[in-house]
Image 1 (cartoon, helix red, strand yellow):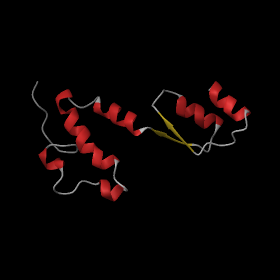
Image 2 (cartoon, rainbow, N blue to C red; image 1 turned 60 degrees about the vertical axis):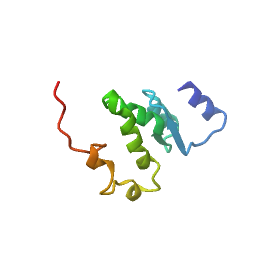
Image 3 (cartoon, one colour; image 1 turned 120 degrees about the horizontal axis):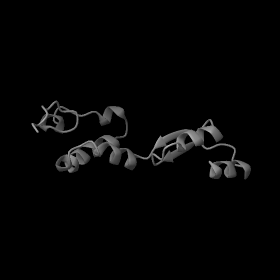
Image 4 (cartoon, rainbow, N blue to C red; image 1 turned 90 degrees about the vertical axis):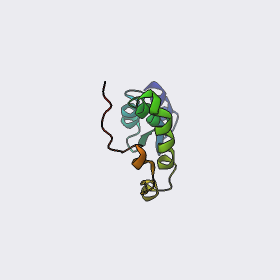
Length: 100
């Protein structure tokens, strides 16, 4: 918070967008000092956090399947087509859990 306060004291009036790494409390600190700031988490950190919940042997494939989504120009382009990997068990597929 001290860094943000220093920025404010040095004349920074507003921050348009802050891209953060998921550090706990940092978005709240930014919004406390610069309330109009749009805070978003860096895409790399979002993907890393998401992949923690994917079985290790499937992480590479899931990461490949996610790339067209996060590089799409808009939400419509990010939606999977009927020929996408969701049919082959990619993200969003409805596979049964593997036994034990």
